[in-house]
Image 1 (cartoon, rainbow, N blue to C red):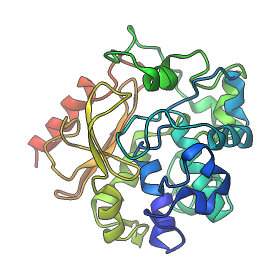
Image 2: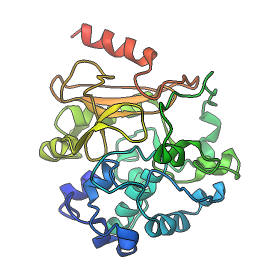
Image 3: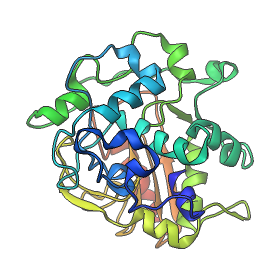
Image 4: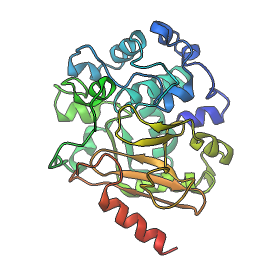
Amino acid sequence: MVARLIDQGRLAYDQPVAEVWPAFAQAGKGEITVEQALSHQAGLSGFVEEIEPSLWFDWDATCEKLAAIAPLWPPGTASGYHPVTYGYLAGEIFRRVDGRTMGTALREDLAGPFELDLWIGLPDAEHGRCAELQRPPAFPDFGEINAPTKAAFLEPWSSPGGRGQAEWRRAEIPSANGHATAPALAKLMGALAQGGWLDGEMILSPALIAEMARERIAGQDLVLPFEMSWGAGVMRNGPLKPWGPGEETFGHSGWGGSCAFADPQTGLAGAYVMNKQSAHLLGDPRARRMIETAYASL
């Protein structure tokens, strides 16, 4: 969604976030660029000081708090996965430029016109279709715990809570409560794997797809226990190769096993969703087996 704004000339990756969101410049964040925020370099992986878990349901209050706090590491020096705060950073950048929330724009511009069963902010009428998640049998291995990891995942307030499942499904939290089917995700990623074309319409130019997926930072992530390569809004396949052998493949994985990916070199794309979560943060064996089988058939 942010890449589409850039494709339209309404935003630039090298533009400081504070140019569209002035309050974000507080606490030494004035030079953080859009692409740094989108590649998990902003140092805002979570809140160190205690908040009410229900704060996440108040968009404006959460964004106001994010704008006010100082980074947990010098921005631009390392990546550190922002599991929940990311959605507010990307979503508020989008809203400041477009005027709509990201969930509304997704529905109006892509999901509705192209019949994608994909939602950020799920209407009550769709709640009965949702599979209930089964928690993983063990906690993920985060390696050595540091302040960015603790703020991101391990504090009682690290994720939304206290409002019940129905309100959680209704909320627009682009980083944490997208609802979708695997075919919808695969169809969207298929467009990114094949030059931006979706049902005969270009939704993103080939040049912008390549620019979005271009490596912004690589190395040991400060939150995830992996060496990561990040584009502007996407994980890149190297060096872990969770989505087959493609060097230019990009996408995203979620805790529990879900993933979606696009490989521009072969035109292959795919998605895997499940309701029985595993303890894998990246590269769930169930998805790996299917992806490897798909590549073996090419």
